[in-house]
Length: 123
Image 1 (tube, rainbow, N blue to C red):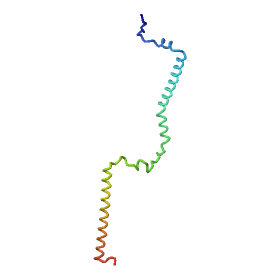
Image 2: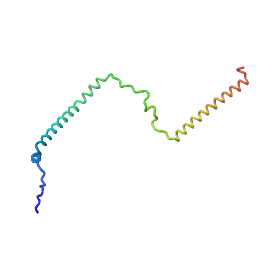
Image 3: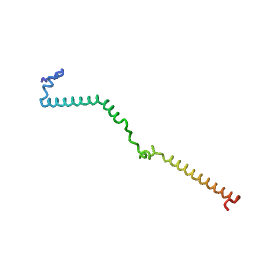
Image 4: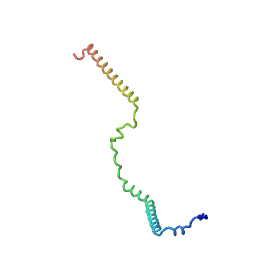
């Protein structure tokens, strides 16, 4: 049997346009027109952007930015989590400082009491 072999030559635009149904062709034309209008609108916006930015900058020249909150949730949180062994070491250091402070205060009180016995300051 002889089979028809498709030609290797690509179709021309005219033949492709003729094969498309008229309703589909109208739809493609309207879509193309809307895309062209959208492209034109975007091009106009791009061209107008520098002058709009200049106008906005001049209009807000004397306006200060909003003040930042003094206490935000981020500032209350630590920036990164501290490992457990480092937390335990820090609590040990704090406890050592508290004990050292108590010993110093007790020593000062004992020295004052001893000096009061010898010099009779408060009798």
